[in-house]
Length: 355
Image (cartoon, rainbow, N blue to C red; front, side, top):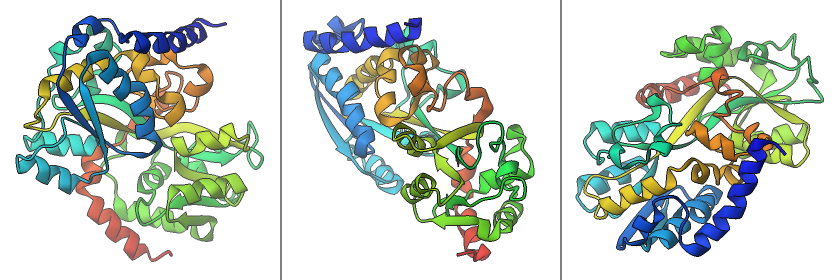
């Protein structure tokens, strides 16, 4: 058994005992003296179920804090809630662009990084340490392909290959109106990740249109995943988390991590949160690498804290963004640019009139 596997096994055995004792991480005796309330607003679904099991409930049991979960929001409602002063959440799970927008508008409390334990901070990349948001997980937009159509040694390696229908014949698939693959098209034109932004949208949409009938568009990623699983598409643009269940089911699919884009999520404390102190205690609890790692197998989201990979098996890590073996093959998407040009992307899709 490898050192990593031993660490994972040790963590799995220890977490149950730790929760039963009311102590999950070092420093928990101090947490156990605390009380009061905490409301966490997250995104629902299987993601929040995993958060609840491995993060929220263990914190509540270890700290004595009465933790309430809520789910479902949009940026506009969140902004109005904070601006009105009627703040009902103490911690919110948000995307990078939401964190940047709210932070710049003065609508988030500043993260007190001095209260985050040193062993939590050590594995967090410097660029991820926001003043107003604490980094948690990331997902990635990747290329996935059929391994029967493209066996080892003949698989597509770049987005230029995705667009090369003569060398790599077959159907492609992506969602359309809600998130057309403009970044992937731009990378097919120029594969330098460092020069991806700003994107020439006219050129990107022309590139998308050039695929013609070789590209099939879907309304959602569930349908894109089904196309790949059924063999109706040989290559797809898809979030990594949609591919992992297909791999687990034994489908002949694989991820090409080259030129992938990562999208981080953060915990933030809304300005005026009624339980700010407990919110910081929660961050100091959940930030531990072994705690961050716990939700990876259930969600297929990669921890931003690189030290967390010590507690993740190689089999699970292979399907996660941030995996030390593949992290250098991608880059973080420019959330600020995407937010600014979201309307232009929608207009470009409409003009393309491909559907």
